[in-house]
Amino acid sequence: MTRSIHPDSPDTRTCAIIVAAGDSERLGLVQGRRKPLLEIEGKSLLEHAAASFDACRAVTRLVIVAQARDHDAISKLAQVKGAFAKLTRLVEGGATRSDSVRAGVAAAGTEIRLVAIHDAARPLVTPKIITAAIDLAAREGAALVALPVTDTIKRADPEGRSAKTLERAGLWSAQTPQVFVRQQFQELLERAAADGFTPTDDAALFEHYCGPVPISPGDPSNLKITCPADLDLATALFARRHLGDTP
Image (cartoon, rainbow, N blue to C red; front, side, top):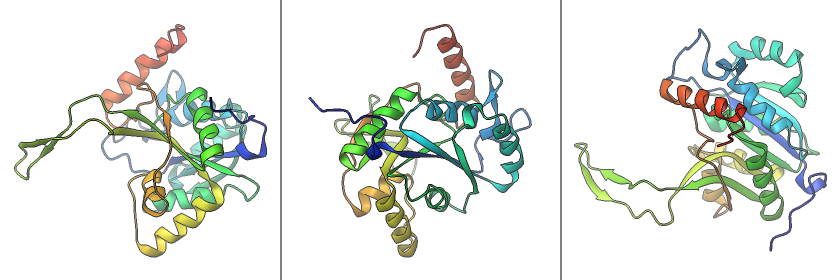
C-alpha cells in the first residue's frame, strides 16, 4: 500500500497556477464576459476553480495567469478574498499556452516545491482530485490527472472518413491539474522555449524530455468548458452538488 505524504510536509508545498489566458475562440463572449469570468451560480469559472485549490492544505499560494484586459476584473474579485485568499501574483499570459505556463511558474516562488497547473476552464475540479495529484507528484516527481478512454476512437482519412479504429487499451484522456517539481519543470519550460517546442499540454513537455508521467485518477465531472453545451452541463453538475449528490 502506498503511503500518503502529510499535507503540511515541505515535500507537498504547492503553488497552484491557474491558466486563464486563452482567447476562448470556440465559446466567445457569453453574459458579456470572456470564459474565465463567466458565472455559474453567482461565481466565475475562475472563482470555482480557485476555491477548490484554496481548500487544499498543501496549496500555500496561488498564481493566476490571465490576459491583461481581464486583470482589473480579477483584481476586483480578489479584493473580496474568499477563493482568492492564497493569491500572491496575477501575471500576464503569453502568445502560447507554454508561454503562459512559463510566466506562471516563474512567479511561483523558489520556496515552493511543486506547481499544480490547472485550466480555468475546468471549474468543477475538486479538492480530492487536487490532493491526490499533489500527493502522487510529491512521491514520484510528476502527476497527470486523467481518465481512461471508454469511447471507441476512430482515425479519419483526409476526406473525413473513418479509416482506422484505435485500440482503447492504454489510451487516457488528460485533464488538469498536472503537477510537477517546480525547479525541474521551470528548467524544462526554458529548454522547450530554446528548442522551439510547444506541447499541447504540460505533461507532454515532461514526456518529451523526461519520460512517462504517473497518472492520478480524474473524474468525468472535471470537464473542460469549450462550447455553450459544456456550460449548460457544468451548471447542471453544480446544481447536483448543492443538492448533496456529488458527481
